[in-house]
Length: 78
Image (cartoon, rainbow, N blue to C red; front, side, top):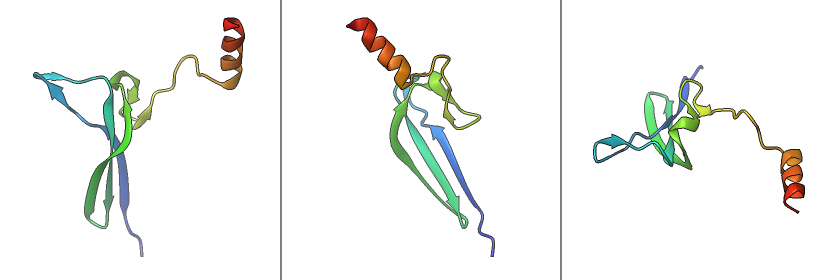
């Protein structure tokens, strides 16, 4: 028995005064399973510019933050 399912992550589209909101937008999750659909917010928010709609995930940044970078920055502040 093969049960088809599909999970989609997308940003919620909202407008304020007719202008799309592009900051602090909720991430929604849609699950299709056995011809049934449920959609809900994940509890996470993100700016539209940081979201990759094709890959349904957060875009990778040019300068990722890792523990070495954080340690180096904290040493510069001391």
